[in-house]
Image (cartoon, rainbow, N blue to C red; front, side, top):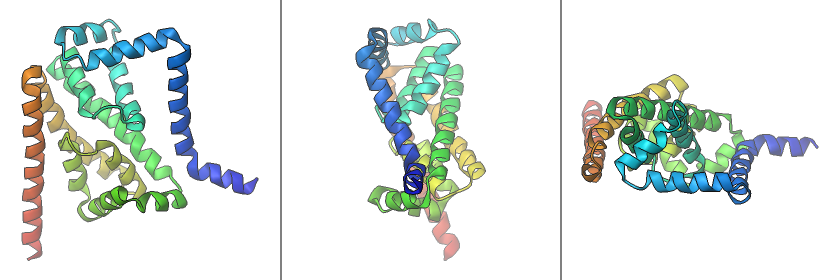
Amino acid sequence: MTALRRHLGDYWTFYASAILLFTLVALYFTVPAFQQFSREFWDVIWSEDEERISTFFQQFGIWGPLLIIFTMVLQMFLIIFPTWVPMVVAVIGYGPWMGMLISVTAVFCASTVGYWLGEKLTGAVKGNLLKGEKFERLSDFIGENGFWAVVLFRISPFLSNDAISFVAGIVKMGYRKFIMATLAGIVPLAGAIAYFGKNTDTLEAGLYWIGGGGVLLYGIYLVLKYRRKV
């Protein structure tokens, strides 16, 4: 019994994620209304139809922004689309300023949940995760660059925003430092998406500019860091 409790304590976050996924799948196949809503939601967020997206979310009133925030947190577990997609949807649905506020709030909530889950993992699970090549590289990267490593991952739309939250919690970066770095990176990204996302035709080019700008800033940081060592 003690061994079972220890095992459950070690892996409870994985079991919680599995239960969440199983619950959603079960609802999808057993509740017609949920299935219809899920299909409509999926079609809308990928439609690139600005009027359709705006109409869909505004019909929920105050629950519309909460739906986007919940989607951002949920996709951290399911990884069903890139992090920037709900941010674009928020801008199209609620305009640049409100969309930017919703986006930053959503990333703040998702990052906090991810960090907390990573921090709560026990030593055995952390060891197994950090043996993976991806997690090992991320943990080394955060350990060496700390604050600016998180900023880079947040400001670039093409890097793994979800993994950085888990790993920061696993290596116990420090929540205040982590969340400040998250905001330092996500606010410029959300602002840029708010600007480019007003027109879906310019969004793709805008995302490449944003990602390139993030890599350039990090390159400048590495050069300055190297020069300080020399």
